[in-house]
Image (tube, rainbow, N blue to C red; front, side, top):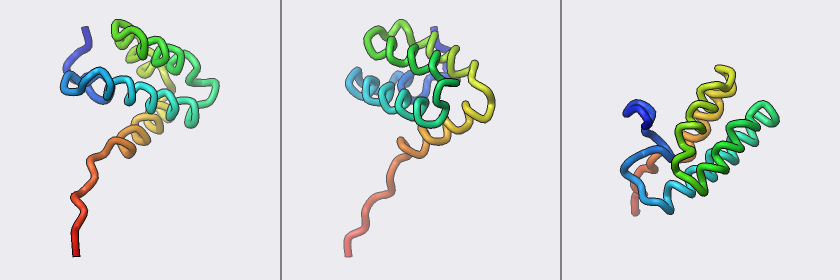
Length: 91
């Protein structure tokens, strides 16, 4: 069971399976780019979670196990990528 406070991003209850897969993949790419080998465990858990949603708690544990700066960079990059875009204005 994932605590309510941790149900964001790919662990959100409000997204469908295809969106969850897309978010897991984008988070894994961010982890690889921002942490390199320090994020190997998290990247592997995210990869497993793509195929088995029951692995999401293990991925969350691995995310929490990152060093504070790595975790901050991963989460801020993920948040920037998935931030809702303002409506485009037409002239």
